[in-house]
Length: 252
Image 1 (cartoon, rainbow, N blue to C red):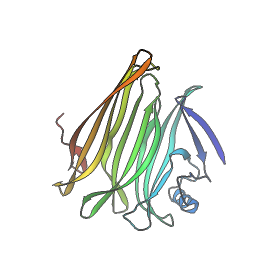
Image 2: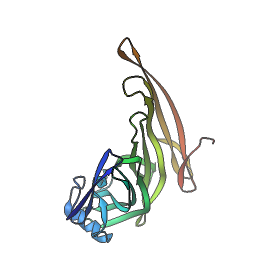
Image 3: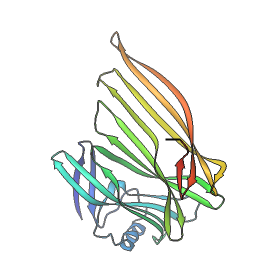
Image 4: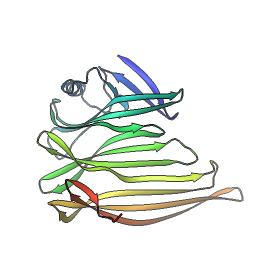
């Protein structure tokens, strides 16, 4: 087993692993190795940190699995690396047989805007009476301490034949940003969204209501004390199924 430890943006340490290892996020070694064999990835370089497997509660003995493989490692200096990752998103049975698959080359990048996490969302996204989607959430974080920024996107997938079809692509469900003096004073803004299925339909699929909470925090130093003032507002938007993909009905 060979391992290469790399540092991303001076903040994120990951491990690149070549064959015969499996992540703690994958619960069954035999199932995982069988999946790699079917994908012809036994000798590929993959990111152990971002392997994830989760059983889908609405299907019997069906597991969603994400296998990210490294397509590019770019070393710009001693402290900075850039990555590009291919994406294999799969549904497998308990024995490791691949039932449905989605593949996207160079799906994810990690550079100054570092890839922090990839997660499977097993919420019951009922798109209609016959279709349940699961989600993939991806979180990136900027490396600046004085000007922090994070973003979380969600994509939704449904099985169709022996494929997985993406019906919502990289939708920003949460972000946080701000600027401060590294001591006290500064301003911070955040948006957090929750997906809710609507009874209204577009082209046979339920609309999705995205309910947002917007938060603002202003920190000010007064007589040596750091005083925070926080405010929240709320909003929403609707996603509709048009031309095979969920899209916002906001006018641009």
